[in-house]
Length: 354
Image (cartoon, rainbow, N blue to C red; front, side):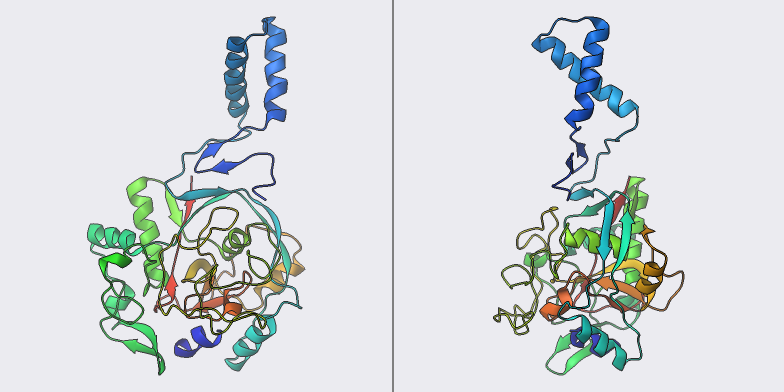
């Protein structure tokens, strides 16, 4: 199953405030009453200097009331305002039945059942973790990945997915050592265990918490307020994402097949400023995979900050990769592997917890 299924499974902007990279713009409808009250109490005359002083004071009053907190986010992390959204896909969405049928062949009851989810605010990286960033982690800690300890990693070739000895995070999709020109590509051949270890290293050196996103956070961030199969609408072209363009979505025209990853800042970001949320590499999530977990959530009504089943055998992957079909890059598409699994189409990005 491991060697087959990756291929065959083959608004923030509309809110009253904008958060980006830890900077908060205070809603004027809350600042103005405070400003006017301060002016009345102090019986100040209107002037530029007085108004400026009042705005500063109003900001202090607002934040001291803990209505919002200004948190300096790390570079390249975006604050995603929480909210409620419909997770999963409608029964009519093209690709949903095909995914279910593939999983059924392996005895897995797969579901994308729509259900309501409410999320708190979270920060997420604009980009997948790069080769360069992962190298810094290895050099600082001496960490050995599951690929290095377990005899290599899986690559895709004309024979399908095969495990190749000696392949690890230093290597590209063909199993050759990556050139320096690919340092800004997403790191691949990393397991869920490796991704968690990287987050723990980031947490230890910063004194803050870094972790993998939950499956719900990853879909919410990917959708960026959309309800269509992709955050680009009802289709995803190879001008918008990196996947196998020989297999476009829903009968649309074919595109290019790059046969490789691309830099993490390729293509246009979604409207929340996040890059390559569709394609390039499938990204690990923190959750255990539960085939019917969505149905359990739906029965519970609106669920808040779901973290997946309490136990399981597989961890969730989201987003699709350079070697997947377009349908496997849908916002709702779910993939999964064992925590020690690694291959040429798997990477990760982190969430920052202030």
